[in-house]
Amino acid sequence: KSKRPFRKRLPPIQSGDRIDYRNMSLISRFISEQGKILSRRVNRLTLKQQRLITTAIKQARILSLLPFLNNEKQFEESAPRTTGLRTS
Image (cartoon, rainbow, N blue to C red; front, top):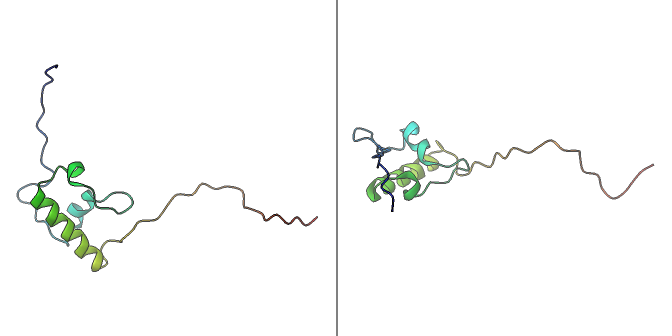
């Protein structure tokens, strides 16, 4: 095994950050493009922090500060579909 230098990662939530449903800048970091809550492994959070983030996201969704789903898919412009009937 090779010994690579280990770089300590900074925690995603600082000790002064307040995990709250109103703190949208903090909450939005833990949501995927589709609006799903990212897992604890991806976020690199502790179990307690992940629980607090999850409840804050759910509260923000209920109060309609966040959408439940983000289904804005980018469709490529294509030729309009025609039915099988041809009128000549």
